[in-house]
Image (cartoon, rainbow, N blue to C red; front, top):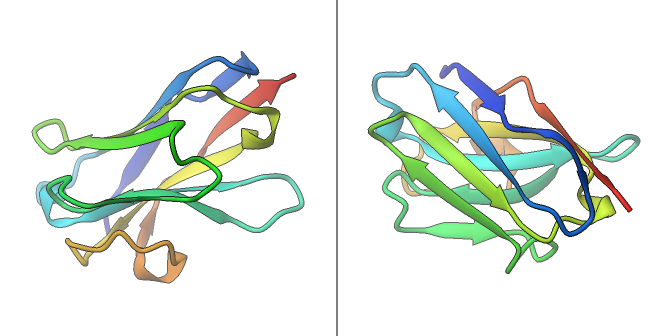
Length: 125
């Protein structure tokens, strides 16, 4: 499994932006597809976005399409989630995840076998 550490969360106002980062010490990080999920209080974990090993394929949940952008820098072993035009309903703990299927941009949590500890994002109205 891959060790993942998220950062960049915080408290912002509606309309603001945040950039989340997920760093790994895994030497073969570029072999993994990466995903972002989130979980709000009292709700199930939901898919946010995913990116293939080289960034050639991406996938977004409808709720974030046009506002969030996923990217990765394999030289830095890091995946990013740029979140713009944040809404109160984006409030959640955000988790990054790694999938050994390099080309996957799946929204299913079951294809990811490594998870970070999460970072809290709170958007006030």
